[in-house]
Length: 178
Ligand SMILES: [Zn+2]
Image 1 (cartoon, protein in one colour):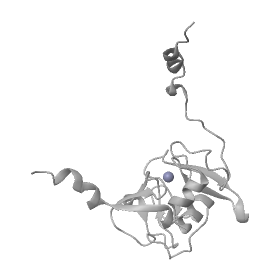
Image 2: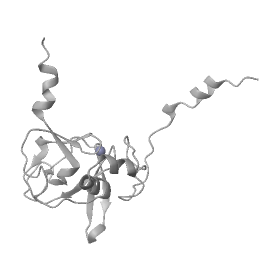
Image 3: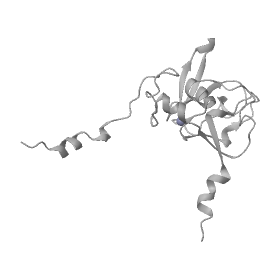
Image 4: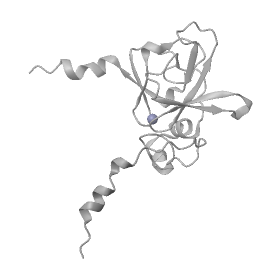
């Protein structure tokens, strides 16, 4: 009797494994759960991120206001997740809220971020996380009267994101005539 190995491989198609929509893990809970694409162990995150980045991104910490890199930045470009590189916000939706953190009235695309009800610290807030790697980004507030198209304020830690200025991202195609 010969076991048909090829058969069993195809029978076990990797495409059959759909990304699991796991229930929301608490910040700091087993980091292998949740997230659509990037799954790393807590040890890996600790190794790749600075202690400050780790504290905010993986432990849902908050940087002090007016201390982050981007709270007053007006440079045109795209803001990526500092943990996994997913594009999350753009300068087009950034606005001056004067709250001390970078503020956006919308994400680059719904689906790039996910929302979690956060009742810690005695407040009722909505946490914003990167949908790809489940890292903490900040919180979103609504109805504050900022006069933006959505009347929402995505209050994001600078240390959770990285700005890729527009000039940099456009160089690749245009300057290639040898
Ligand atoms: Zn991410």
